[in-house]
Image 1 (cartoon, rainbow, N blue to C red):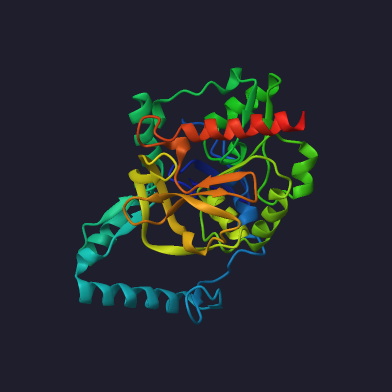
Image 2 (cartoon, rainbow, N blue to C red):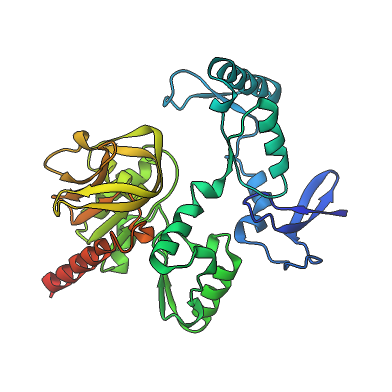
Length: 358
């Protein structure tokens, strides 16, 4: 067996790794013990070999069969897949010019390769993943706190109770954050995390005061099991607040539909009009799908906020359920405290529900 030193490619951090190779196959992976930046890997990096051998992982390129949205695919050889992509790029460049092509990358040691490819096509349009993801949060933090996210220090170690509303940080990439939360747990802190597939029975058994449906990626219409499960969770009548993907999944559970936006809403300066107050707020957004407000059954709820630019649904107030949702990100609001009041509204709903129980 030999040891091969490389970097993990799962995110832009590119942590140094050491990989054990036997008969041409990787058999173990760990952080590079000789690295000056530390030898620890996040859970995703440690699980890299399991991911590679996962039975659900595509083993070859897939090309769509039939209309978009039909979810039908066929396996093809790499030569056919690359020829298809090259043909599409060439046709776009020839018809609309090279500047009509734009590349996005995840950074790391391969950035120069991406740039060289873009230059070969003749386009100057190349940007990193952070432009449409973390930079929104950085700008929101800077506008509210005067510091970008990278300079904020969150004192997890001294916390008494950490509620992870948007993601499970213990499965995330920020190792310093994981270390802080781990230390807090050692000090007796209570951490509450529920997976996406938690059933209504499991939620009920916890007897929570409120439920947060967090943001996330992908086509919201695809996780049909989660959508069906949400119908039962809403029947528990527990105060619920949904954000981004949580907003979309709730609408689908209520009988509405979603659509893919032509360009998507990105950035920390998206205007949203609130019908109840008549005000327009500046919000942070990063989504490619939207709820079709006109498809929401009237008996289930009503559109509460819309995007001031294109009129798409940005929020729903439900009638049948103790729930309201928003498409934008109040947890990373672009304007100073513009939509922070939504968390107060959620907490007021929680307090009101507790009084009813008493």
